[in-house]
Image (cartoon, rainbow over all chains, first blue to last red; front, side, top):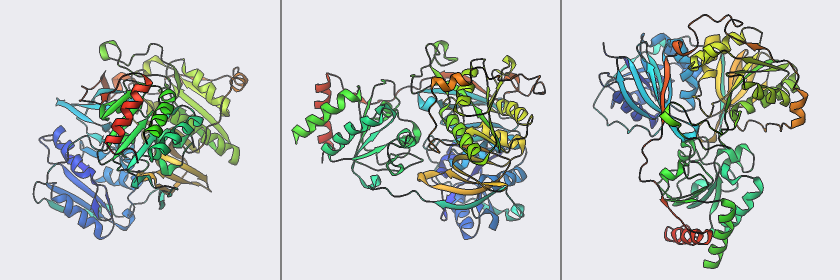
Length: 323
Length: 262
């Protein structure tokens, strides 16, 4: 019997998440004989809208519409999925903050193997699935093999699988009754939007971005001089915000801002996917890092292996002279 | 409030470049500097702050080779009242579920109101906290960046996409995985480490935890790492070379040509 594969369709404001078609593509790459079923959970008219949208690409979509699912957090979805998924099912999730919240626990409850943050697929043989993951912020990759005979929960990193094309009209099956009476020991209160900063880095054309490689807080002054000389705006990767050296509103990445500059100068940034996930619009990307193997050099247009403390003053001076 | 914090000893990526070792079965471990996993350090700091505010005790537990003692002692020097080590060669090669199974047994040896882990580890999969919660059948929240203690529950914030914060109330006992940036972990000096140098840290093995055979270790692992590798490089960046002056001059030209100088 072919493996039964299910994909969780995340959605906001009546629109399916960008991950939806990537999940379908990942599911059919790994399990070519399967006909993946999409799962849409929520409350109100949005559920039907999203389910219809998903049915343009999935052959079958199960919809769950209940008031309790108005904010479908992982603590609500987990018991529901345990109830409705058949034994041995494979569940594919986006490796998002929802997928990370839901995935490990549901794998335990289903007795299924857990394969998180998958970036590639390398074969399925005799119930053994082989996938590609990354460790140490992308410095090395690994092949990971799992026994999926009793099912699997797989979370897919955004951008790792090309989005599937729409395949025609699938059917929507209303399973709302199965989601009746859900309660949770974690109750949603509110979402607090990110605070706006003094400058809006999402609107800047030229960004100078700093990461852990800047070393000490006092070195930021060197970058500020360069930024001023270039007429650019200053932003950063996560460790700089964690250290409280710059405001959260300056952070580029999946857990920060999404920026679309024309030019991006990355200083001491290794290039973890969480950072690059916030960099859109294919800018001219210049990376300076003292580690020649930093993953950022794989995606940059131009790379320089250098000590920032030596290069930055020289660069600032030459830009000032050139003006 | 009785709090258990699970910590991991990992190669310090701020100090090391990680590369694939000979044969590809592991990373190259020569000359690696190890430290407490960064996310776990934030979890310990948060636990200590809660205990200082609300009363109670913080226990730090680590699993692995005997060298984990340095990490457990360091976190105790921050202010965790107790430490625990789980050392058993039979557990080497456990997958995430195997580790969570060991921690479940640790958690059940005492009465904890709250268990914390780091949201992820440098060499990990952001999985152990969620699996532990499922095994204990406790509620769980990941990527937590705020905790406020209430009566019988916690008001927590989760870091979600776009820098937003998802606020919820979660019943205790519960498991939380902690995101970096939730606090500013205190500095640990040599004096602090010396103060806890002679504190006894119990060392447990599978027998002491009454773990059923076949629940941890490589034989129980559903998920196995086959090898490490470096993916075939794409075109990659055009790498500039030269003296500092020459590098700067090339960068000025390239930035100007691409609209990077306003």
